[in-house]
Image 1 (cartoon, helix red, strand yellow):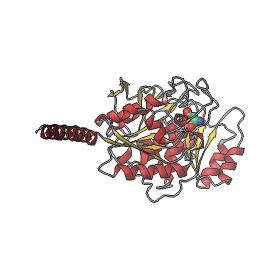
Image 2 (cartoon, helix red, strand yellow):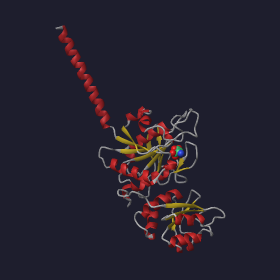
Image 3 (cartoon, protein in one colour):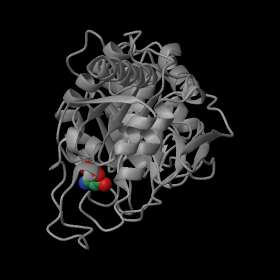
Image 4 (tube, protein in one colour):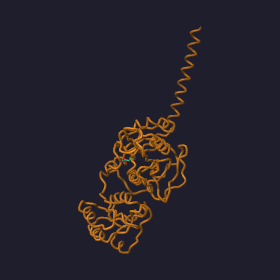
Length: 358
Ligand code: ASP
């Protein structure tokens, strides 16, 4: 009799235990599934001491270790990591871009995946974000995140940035906003964001135009929408590409000469973004070299080294010389768009249309 009571009690306890596990598993399954693609950078950086904020080794720490360092992530999403590269983003290449874009598209095509987070060095994060903004074919959230302080630093910014990025990628409000950047409690759009400071954690800004929203207690809040076409509304398709056209940036300065432009053409550049002074102004010593390049079929886009403002057709002569206008894209982003444009066409009117649209 006594044994039977114990048997019943233990059976009931076991069933309760299984039930709780089941509910827990159900809750887990109801969480969004977020894939984290890692490429390296300071967020995965390691320094010999916790006060060392520069001169550390980037990309030392692998993605699973970064995820494990932020257990709170698991309250908001089922996350799994994948290492795409492990480099400082100052060494970013077209090859890594294409691998990243193809894998992102593959993942987002899977109905079980709700969003993608990409860990990235901050130096060229803005270019990767804009590239993906133009080639990802999905409405699902894609969020880039990095850190200004290595993972080993006192007050490292990586863990909170990663948690915010996952929560953003898991949120319905991020869908259809194009590729986003989550850094320093702010949400920026890929097209307008740029790195503005060499070392501060508040480095990512959309100068003059402003960020799209911010995080409060880790919860994303949006206040603005992007207006330019992006992701599945673009004409760019990287599926069958194994390389991107070579486009160089020429940065003007006092007493400029034509040597670097000629060298870019001789090296096979198919496009040149001219980071002009003011509203994309061209030095008179450089202009004949650009005209010669244009006649050889190299596409010239005027941009500005000022970092803000629009470049429109400001000189009848430069328009007559068939130089295109880069709108308000900074030179490094104009370069991304020109690379993609050249995968579709060399028609100058068409490429100018793309600069007006994207
Ligand atoms: N040089 C590093 C990189 O871009 C800097 C960083 O991640 O903050 O990878």
